[in-house]
Length: 76
Image 1 (cartoon, one colour):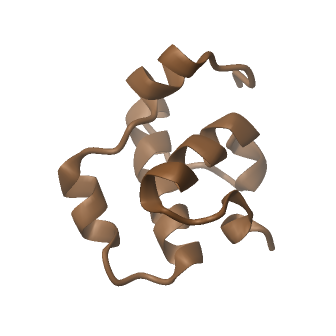
Image 2: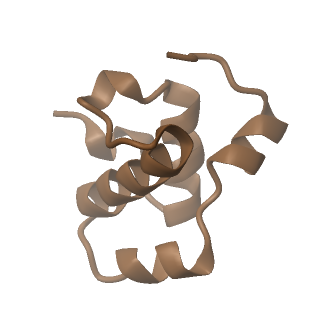
């Protein structure tokens, strides 16, 4: 699985839409980031991630910034 993404690629491939962000409203931080990661991974790969290691740190950071939580919200 690809581990390196440029800033442009992150923006193009891993940016959440308004509808995605609306689904995340009211969830706890881990839930917001977890659901965002699942949605974005599904769109990119046609499947849900098997575990956290399927998500490169740059992708997690990009998604976390979009939903307003720390990238460490998925830890554990």
